[in-house]
Length: 244
Image (cartoon, rainbow, N blue to C red; front, side, top):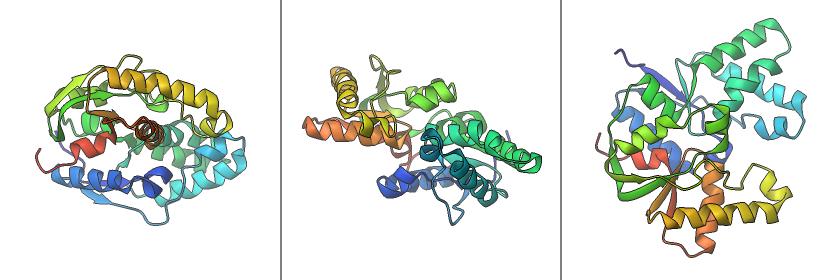
């Protein structure tokens, strides 16, 4: 199988501000797999917060700028199901003319969430974990429901040397983050989170793995408040060590 030669990273707002280690792990992992990595300068938000708040004109301006920034990318890899969903499913309809729509559709076809890119494009199945022991996996809403993806991250985790994957009860249930939902309805968000974290701790796992920084921020904060020994980490961090 001919592997892609070059990947452009689309690093999300939360990744840039709160989780820069996710981007570092992605670069380390992809380079180890023989893929050249670049980072187009001038990236901003994907536009999803604007879009979800009803500011579609402003979201369209962000989308058009992003399409231009990544026009020369062979493949675009995103560490977030939500941002990948925005690019793949919302960008084309936001464009105001046929030429712009075609450019957005072209970018959508070249954009991948990280686990999907590893499994579906690179055909990677076996790696070595940076953290050993028992882990569990939380399905982020946009990756699961928006992109219809539940198997690629699990396939990587099941075959990950040094790790035992334990299925999380209610893995497909929201963690309570939901973007601005957690701010607008904090009591409801906290109740949803408590249920999620109780299920996480019941697995006996040392880490809960997710593919979206929003979920990680929500769960990590809740785990700290519970003084839990469980860590919330991104899949890229678990895969981005020295051994393949």
